[in-house]
Image (cartoon, rainbow, N blue to C red):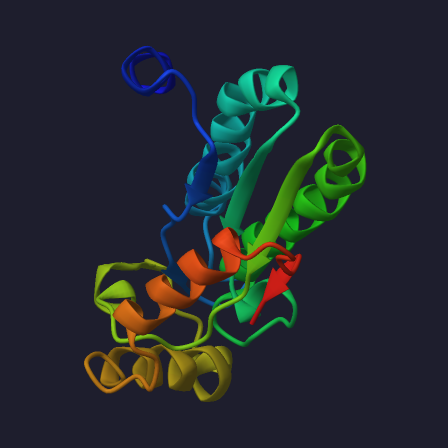
Length: 177
């Protein structure tokens, strides 16, 4: 897709890494295969896109990469431990990449959103094995996430506009919360 976009538009100026999946379960409840899938999509999907666009941006000495992580990439939350770990990984990659490519004229921005009115909770995977000892922590969190669908405070359209404005600003921030 990157090759097709570059062939059609001649270059990619901005990459917005927004794809991701969620998963509910206490750390001990989460199967290794589910944890690996989260990391494949949320971390390696982001890294793969970076690898795909970076050569062109580096050659032009310009561009911006925007990585959407999560407030869960800055603070761990009960019931979404592996999701948070995947977002922490994107934060760490972004911090390092920023130091490597900003001297080359390429900007890296991370966006750490919180609860937005999306279907993320209802489309997220869940642990198949539930351990009763975690019900008051991870179970309560899972139920609260599901109950929040359609009631989250954040407006995704306003967030998209804020990200657009931040990306196009002459003096863009390296983080948008």
